Image (cartoon, rainbow, N blue to C red; front, side, top):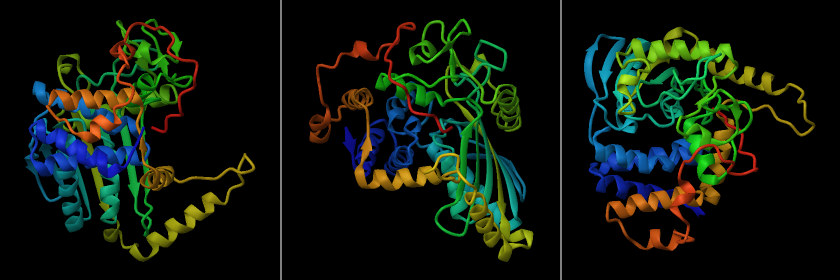
Length: 379
């Protein structure tokens, strides 16, 4: 099923208003979620709506919160998200960092106790739009324990996103948006909803055996995600935990915090103008990009892509052709709408196959769901 992005933003906005958010908050959260779908990161898009609404209902994330400054000086700020929606408190934290960097050349923002921050690439893009470079390290202190350490079986680490952004002088910044694990949890959920398998080398089951079945990850006992690049990704994950968790005061992954999803983020924002090379920066970046892209490709019709370039192309395509949602994701959103007494023609006209049974989205053990291959994870 395909939807225009404006339709999904409007629907998300209505949902979050009904869930207790102010109009501007609801619009911003909906816009950020749909933006994730537009750039191809469906794992961080509207599939998150039911979870967000459930967390709001249960008080695990709080509507209409703003950041609270714990301490600050000219270039450093420690801020508390007060368990507000990450799309709101994350933007406030980054804007504070942009303002400080514009005055002093560089800033470090430590955000603690944020609700799910969504696609971390948003924050690098926000800094790049202001002409600034940025680095972002993220962890989840409690319910986000998803990843086994190298050589281990049990979940001990969070997905630990790392994102970096570099402006290029035009509308196409370099945005490296990745995790220290092989696949984002949201993409496992997308695979579960689509009835597809996760690609090789991403998951282990509860006994430590390799598996492609997303149901094993959500089973009882659960499986785990593997770190990228073996011991290297595991080591990177540990460092990100300490930067985003311990240093921000948000806590590293800890079973005692498992009752809620809370993100910590350490962001470093740099204003290139303070480095005395503003006239040379963009020309050198453009020269280097051209040089890298000039490499011969292994495949005859291959192409060298810059980080973020695939997302830019996907966004252009989906703005024109619409956003594809699988049937289970759509039905879960519709169920959330009904729980909030939201009923109108848009939902009814797009809720196909009403006989689709809830049992198809349950999470049993590790029975095979499909022989189809899942799409390659970019994060």
